[in-house]
Image (cartoon, rainbow, N blue to C red):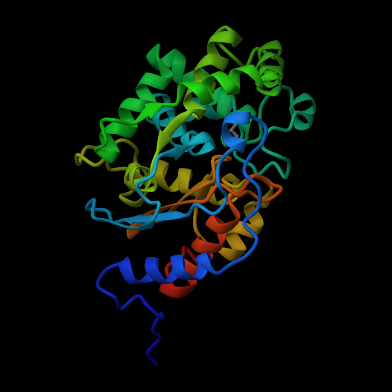
Length: 313
Ligand SMILES: NC(=O)CC[C@H](N)C(=O)O
């Protein structure tokens, strides 16, 4: 019996991207842009871009795929990779690896789990990771930006200062998370220093092309764009596993069911995804569902895995 995926015989990903963009264009209901800070609320939910990068750095794209957007929680994947590369398993004494089943900015679990966040992709866990990266490098955001620029080949990647200021001005909830964990001895830097790093990290702007390329090390089993090794093969596998189980917060089960790939979303409307050994993706559309994931982004990734047959299952 010969089993053929609908489009996977295509020599490039371009036709499937164009088909998906046309389908998304005709799909009503795009969700609402994040409104927890004014700087993001103004985004047009009809914007849509998608890029696929192959392990050799070839990139395909459609729509607004070169338009920089607010990377937000997508950056949590890269800080985790840098900390695992620098410090290895001791990180796991400070943050867990289980799905939380709660919203990304939830406080409730932290108290009865003694200030140890469930996983590195909810805000509390990401604060722990950034705190460790700050201790490791003395400049967490500088290390992160340097990594993203090197992997994407885009030396212009930068922080949007307005968004960073807005994050800081409306950052009481993240501040509460940081102080609460510090009370349990789970934060090493002064909390204001950590928060400043975290708010700037969230405010990095990058395009679908940039982020698909920057995620390439996860498709290359830990190898960076320049051919050097960042992570062991098993560390790359572990990050992919945590993305699958925790990367879209309390919607991770639904995302695995619909898309079937390790993925990580951000409230800027971006989602990155990995087909290990094959390609990485980034999709952007600012309209979010009530769990903070891009509505058109999840739909586009679902169509991609359905049309190509590429998934981890
Ligand atoms: N899910 C996200 O993208 C959250 C990031 C956002 N800046 C926050 O900390 O609340």
